[in-house]
Length: 177
Image (cartoon, rainbow, N blue to C red; front, side, top):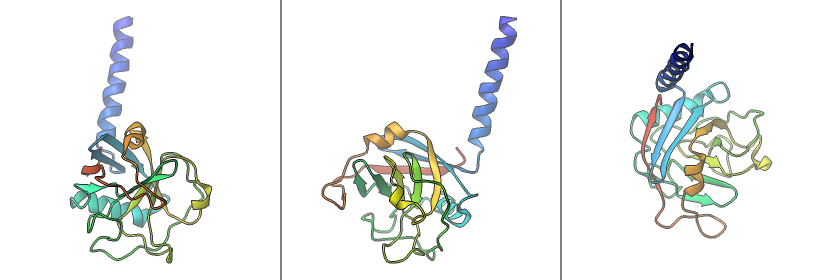
């Protein structure tokens, strides 16, 4: 009986691991501090999620810094053009896809220019803590499901802008687990 139960538990573990590896809505960031796994939410922001997947598959996020990291707020990355928060991708900006999901710890949102809600392109951020002031102002694209301890280890920036000197990097971004 014990062998049967053990075999059953092991088979469930392997099945779960196999299905997670093929999940087209998992974005894995291999960083200088470790691995972060994000479950993307195409049900909330289909155009934004598709953009993240496209850019990851093209290698756009490889060796891209976490250029803006503010203690108690968020860590921002995704500027594969300049690496400093001023760039985007070769694709056009996206229209806002706001949802009712609250910006709490682990939520991933799309960055945009302060003067236009329709200016998200390639940059995204991961929340360290809840910030309800972002609700209805930024598009939620997913949530960290593994590796928040890695996010917590990212080098913090200085000043109000949170610009990081010698920042941690996304070494490689992959879709599908």
